[in-house]
Image (tube, rainbow, N blue to C red; front, side, top):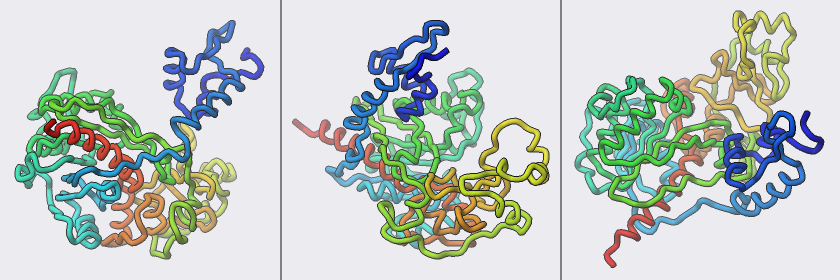
Length: 414
């Protein structure tokens, strides 16, 4: 029985907006001590103490007025691999970094990059066809959202050559060729658990082999970095071993933006979302989604329609909350996919029974309205859905700039 006015760790976690692991660590280190429930020994927290602590936390670490912004003290350059339609590149550019070369295999994404930044050097084609040694010791950062291809770690400390044939091998090869002070890889959160964590161990081992120490990997939630979307990415940061400096991840903001902030005039954008083309639902799906309220999903349907629409999935476990989902104005959007009308990942407009348009997609990913996407509607959705949210890229960019400022300041002749 939990004592009155006390919360268990799960409820306390939601109350202060921190993970259970963080609360356990804070308890163990005395930052926020828990009270043990007399019979079960569970961690509990007095509401009054949490309110006081939350007030202090807001005033310090995550105050709305705090900014990760830092100004570059030099001209910093980037080579980006697997650049896609430019989400990360734009973010880094907004943070003050200059892209000197971008590699991408998708021809439509390359056309998008050229259309918007004619001055960027876009290397179109398979990354394995390009040699980057001309940038050796001339570039400050190599970045890359390498697709997660499996390579077997199998309990052995594999080296660079064992990863041949994977795109991570190409990422590591380019880092080795260029030898920048810092490299940044990004990927989906699922990489952490891929092959029971052995894949990420292999990647860290390879970066160690080529002369880079990996900063403890973090999952960054885009919604904490001025992105109105519940997208999560992991950031893999490598620091060249001759550099004895810490890398600080961007601090999360307390302000959470929602769908209305993305599509209407407000703090994020200075006008309503521009009109554009977009996909449509087939009639049978529209008839079903017409019955779903804002913030609702398939369980809000009549039981007979649930069974018909869900098919065999109806009898399986799990919430499947992304299926037949209508997003609400007052919540961040669920993670966008590359195909907005496909089953199991519906992201229906709050008021109209349709997928988000191309420009609405771009807004949710925080692309500037003037950033044009080339190709068919399907190709444009794919480019946007695969992108790193621009605002998340910018915040990571500030962390890179802060690191490089410290590095070049410390390496100046005394």
